[in-house]
Image 1 (tube, protein in one colour):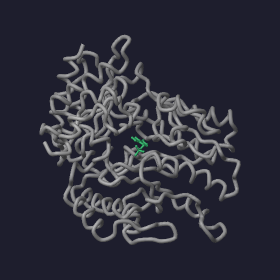
Image 2 (image 1 turned 60 degrees about the horizontal axis):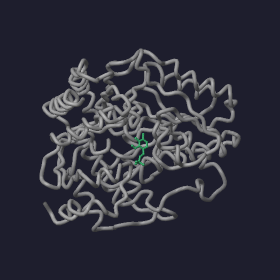
Image 3 (image 1 turned 135 degrees about the horizontal axis):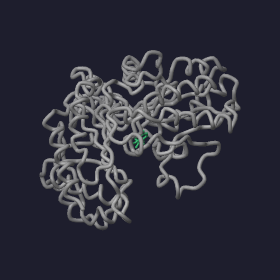
Length: 443
Ligand SMILES: Cc1ncc(COP(=O)(O)O)c(C=O)c1O
């Protein structure tokens, strides 16, 4: 155990670190500390190897500590640690943006840099509002999200998000926001493989909201192509197409939040390509730099960008972050894209998806399992909640799996899985057999 790990292992109960999205008191009483990582694995502070079934937090798509990325960051930090991008520039940001545009779906020619998925969501919403104003429709101010959607924790993303616990203590939020219903439908779609058959009609809710609010007041609709944090909700067949069609008909911008689905998670570089449905803007983060240095971004179509460039001379968008296009993040991003390209990782998931699906669905019939969902290299196993203790059963599975050397993620009573895209068959088998064993072992 190194000195730092030793310190935290012995002093945690009064530790200064206020941990995010964590039961701090519980955690600090019995901590789980990760001290090293490589490829598909973490090692705990006391030297146990843990197979990463979640790509960290849906973000380490190429696996851990990949040499090209590590080298790129080392070189960059020694050469230029930081440079502003307000009224100044540096080559590595321009180069990374160019490289990103090359792998983006056709027409997405511009990218705005942020530092996280939350900032990307808020940036996309602001670009949508400013775009309508730039083209002379300032009356489009409404933003529509979806129940069970997650778009980060900043005020814009929180407002359009649809996870109650993330909102309820933070006041009234942003005005002019509404939500369509989620697409989860256990009664009709449980144990679907890939896209569920039923539920395209849930998109009609958008039409209903358009009638209610008058579509000419609606600026944008934001959805995750596959809802991740709420438990891997795969869009029903025809659903995204229907949303696209309603948005187009009413002049509403469609924003895809690809913070999880971007960079190969579904077996294509982006979910829009996997589902063959194109948004007008889409957000990314996480896999953009393989999570090595925090970064996010918003891709926009040229047709969204151009109205900004046709206004009066001067700053076209009063928005940005000190660290937009940070040199280290851009260097990490270039190293990441090199790694993805050399190893074919942005499409590797497509070849593994069937194997992944079959392995997961082998848990059908295991005790407590009420649904299994999968898409690309994402999956969820939903457990029946224990009476009076929602979330507890899945949490126990998570703890036991970690003890057994496999990192999984839980949200409520759903186990979410998203291994690095370098995962091999034997590792898939290990993740699934471990989850199966733990699920069978909990009361
Ligand atoms: C779809 C989606 N959007 C936004 C975010 C927020 O990203 P961040 O935690 O980097 O702010 C997440 C994080 O999981 C996400 O899954």
